[in-house]
Image (cartoon, rainbow, N blue to C red; front, side):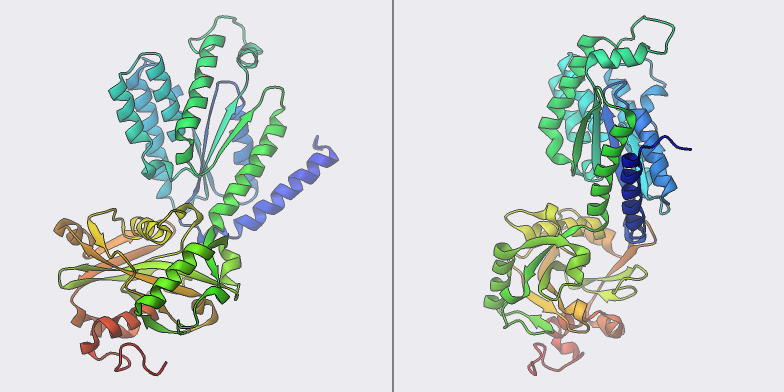
Length: 451
């Protein structure tokens, strides 16, 4: 027998139905979903984490909970920079290790990156660190390398009086700990609010839950709903599309198009008419075109040749002369295509900077090998590496992600492309035919005059 009311049972059934639908999509995720809990003592964080963990596990997800390290820290001087640094770095280590677990679906972090910023603020406010130390801590823990990994921050608070009542309701002592005073709890609450105001924009999603006067199940339902909403975005992200009828008819169904006016018009269409819809909808929508910013990467007289290894992917075991991908909602900026391209280069081949990029696209590339492929138009840029060290690191390198996905790369001279031409994807073949016509691979005319 369970103690659920009919309304509660109906709510749980809806949550479980959503979870089952999302679980079926998880095999295509690049990494686990990462949820961080932060907040005040006795706000219900530990209990909620336990409920959420069981919910995911019973619905087929593989879940790992990383318990807060403050309770097991070997450093006794709580309220000291040493303590906060040890705890925060231990949490960061746990999060980074989770990325390398291909079997993991959901990683729940009990205090992590956001919490490190909260305690940095508190240490500064209480005079325990200098202004320079505060700035250095922010610069490290607020790096986008870390904050971009946290998909949802759940902040749980309650009023100080409730926190203290919960702390001592089942205890045999009334003696207060160093944190459990109303003044200190208010101080911590202010640090949480200030941190969210100053750094909240760095995180993808933040939800604040005040548990004062609320039952744990009510709180858990609210958190489960928010988590499933974030999980939907995580698995079926919103990507950029433009209306097909806004795209110039001058763009043929296949080939590399380098005519400046045509290229510039398409970029303008993206800037003016861009919309963001679920990827699953975009891939099946014949009325939408997906712009794909991509780059050909050069070093001296060599070109970066990539090979994708992702079973089930349209480009699995294909050779590519470009790196890039979809434009996400998070890329929205004045230079949305370049912003998306720079993110993709960081994610796919692990480079940030140390290159020069063409001010404008060098062309558009497209194929009509199937209906789905025809709805993608590559916006091709040229990148020139500016460091021999970076070139050396890219050469003969495998860029591994979790879940069996990787991209291998090597720098080759154009004449070496003869050996792999048949295994190049269509876009790359068109690039060879245009940039190296002397190789006489494919149609004799690089611009496909028959079109």
